[in-house]
Length: 581
Image (cartoon, rainbow, N blue to C red):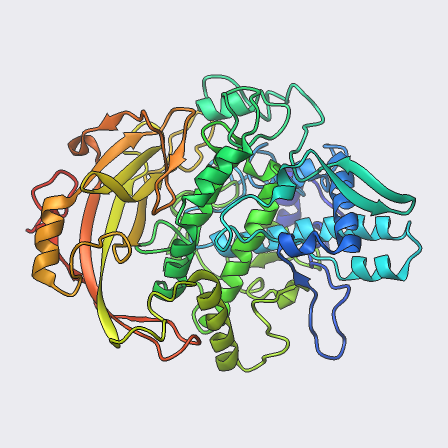
């Protein structure tokens, strides 16, 4: 087999494909399949990092492997640097998968589109596969069956930010304790940050001129990844600020809403669809960690922060749980509104669209959403989706539903046995905002009597250097069930009158260092944010609706939501409100 490199080689291969037996071979990504039970097919699980860190052999191997991974020369395609760089910068081909000249010159990652969940699955599998190779190498130095077994069962951990919205303490420690072949050692913590091996950064790959945004310019001057740093350039990470942001983010409620309300794939997958999506809280976590100046807030830099992989493993886990609950619902064709390094803006994304730059185990075929549909294909599992034990799809859906109710509906708002009525009326607010309405990121805050009760944070997608950003419509929906307490929600007339009088909204630009989160939702805003008149915000629409909610019989079911009734009379006549006409 001949391995070809570069766009010209690929074109040459295509040109002579009919006459020459030439195949463009790429790095094969199959996941990790050690430790899989040959009889049952059960795969080792990706575990919550809070549990994983207590498994001394696995933890010790993981920390050493992450350290070794981050030390691989940045010129190596399988280095931490280059694999992280697939997501965004540097905007260069990885594994000889060339830039599509009709596509924007940005990273390969898919955001604000229907491919968001599935594209990240082989991406995580690549990371896991390369890291597992380091784990195996290190395990061999122990000459121990315990460490050999731990290596075979190794899968990357995840961080469940929805259940416990705070940084795992271990990701903020300067050092960690591990067991090595020579005994207990305290070593530098590779989960704290990534230190770029070449600094200053290559200005061709990480431009700092005025043809890029200010955030990109600032991050190009940081030698290490930072979380909520206290200043724009070479600041100090502030984990306490990150925890303040995460703790006030309403992440659990947002995740529960996706499971219970978004029963169509498109709604679940992307924030440009109406209603709740996993991409929305995912983005909130990014910005809560990065703050104004940190790497996680900028999609072109976010994957360099080691916490990115813990975060996205959890997003994949939530996606796998949703798939188990709705096994017969999958990706339908949708318009690509942003574009990537290889996908042109305006293309139609389908379940057979290549998830570039990732190739399957044969090294010749690109992964697609069809081929990446299950975690089984990649050799890992999650304990919250016990598909090797419960093989009946209906029973598995009920089991995972019960897990979701236990994890993300702990107060049992709609599933408590104490609820005497079998149904009730729920009111909610929907915000619709245009990504390009203002120059930079901004926040729409919804207020009750002047107090914030919900919000939408508009974080613009990346633009090609020197190019314009695509205009996208972002959506968020939140319930008033727990925030409006002074009115009987079953009394429509009373609720309409109350909300007409007491519901308002305002728009703030976000450009300060000091960021906090409102107590209900997950959008960042600053205390001294510049308020923009609502009439000056193109595309802003705030609506109120109600619906009848039927309570489930037990924890293996979700609430059933009825048809929404819009109430334009509540917001009509206010700038940004839905008109009664």
